[in-house]
Amino acid sequence: MRHNFISFVKKESLHILRDKRTMLIVMLIPVVLMILFGFAISTEVNNVNVAVVAPNRTDSVSDAVDRLAHNDYFTFKGYIAADDIDTLLRRGDVGAVVLFDSDYDRLAADLAAGIESRPAIQLIVDASNVNTASSATAYLQSILLGTATAQSMFETRMLFNPQMKSAYNFVPGIMGLIFILVCAMMTSVSIVREKEMGSMEVLLVSPVRPVKIILAKMIPYFAISCIVLIMILLLARYLLDVPMSGGVWGIFSLSLLYLLLSLSLGLLVSTIARTQMAALLVSAMVMMMPILMLSGMLFPIENLPKFFQVVSNIVPARWYIDAVRKMMIQGMPIVAVWKNCVILLSMTVVLLGVSLKKFNDKLE
Picture 1 (cartoon, rainbow, N blue to C red):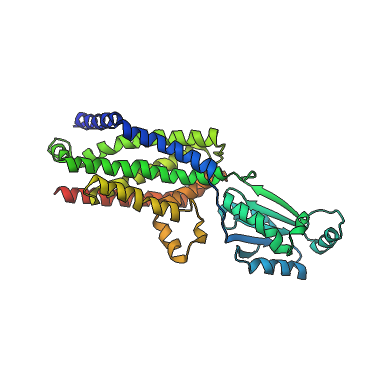
Picture 2: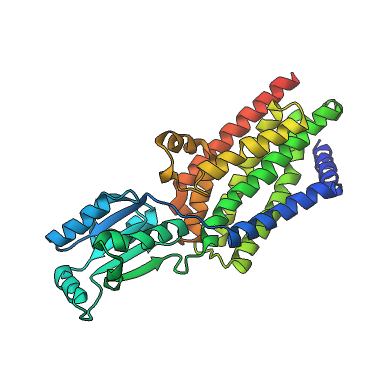
């Protein structure tokens, strides 16, 4: 029985390798998308979460914070202690922190009079997300002081992504998109093709159990996806200079979990679609659009209406992209994104269970 299962895996692997067009698409699309998103695309956002550190809350400080709190570009998260800055930025609770000097009034008066002095305000920005960093640095100065000519009062520090490279933001997102395309789309089309051509019935009368037949068809795509994953990580590290601060093995392990989830999603699509075209449309369109719009890949979740923020919770790519971004750019270990891992694992178990049940029901 084990020999029969291995034979099915070999058959599927040879079938995929002989399909040159499929292999070209599977291997070429990730490279094209990585280069396109890494070099050619950047965006700007609003609604950046901002906190304030103000040791001495004078009237002028209160006025500046009031202008910040009533501006649509930012969401004021209140006053915090200086010791909490790093923690809040790493957790993603805020995207920027405004640190007023304890002697703000005197420094502001000196700088306004042309007297050189140290900066009266310091901006500390999470630059792991280029969109957040660009928005914060572009508007905070003029909003807080009411004039763009007072920029000399600021000292700005960019954390995690000091060069504000767009690739740092888009690489985790494109990883979440590519694996859905490679795993879900190709797996679903492959299984539906067998049913459409009538060869699935021939396979089902073999000594191998139906579940093992499905697993045999999924294993080659999982192996190809692992190769694509390695390609993406190499491109990200050596072509786009994206750091792997949280550890390559942690990122790789999390990605393997996401690959399994994507395969399960493709299996679910194959139980719904009756033709290859239908499977292709469901995989490419129905799943691709939520990933692009609701995962945080292109647009921050905070910018979405409340309804779509809730809907985004069921998009697997949201949790994967968020975790990879934290591990790659912010240098957090995999244990720091345990919540994302648990959510992805739960989704995988549910999708795989529902898919196998629906597949067995159709066979019966």
